[in-house]
Image 1: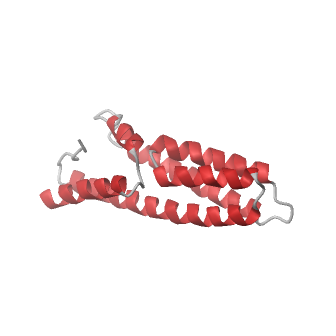
Image 2: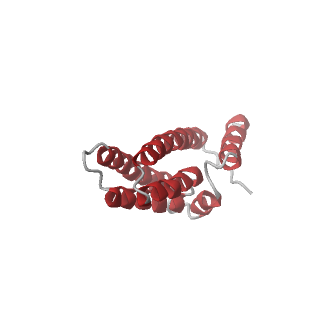
Length: 149
């Protein structure tokens, strides 16, 4: 059991050290309590669903003959806001760059940013899914989830 708790703390620390997550994620975790024990999981699950849809919308919009940079910028803006609200630091930063390429109507820059956004999003998503799995494994043993200090 101690091994699982240590692994969970290490994973979370690594994600923060690597800039995948920032302090906003820690703040989100502080909102979770006994009355809403799955709060973070539920918020992140909604974030994943919205992000998957936004990434697909961006990809589709960039594949059109007449690219609507204003629409793509709106998608990137929405992704940036939701990413910032859950503490997805790298994803948030890429969205800021993406918006600059949209403003400049730079199609190749937008395509590169979308590829980078997908890569960082996948890394973050896989790490968070592992984090939630570890939390679930710890709960199975009726133990408390360690918190970062």
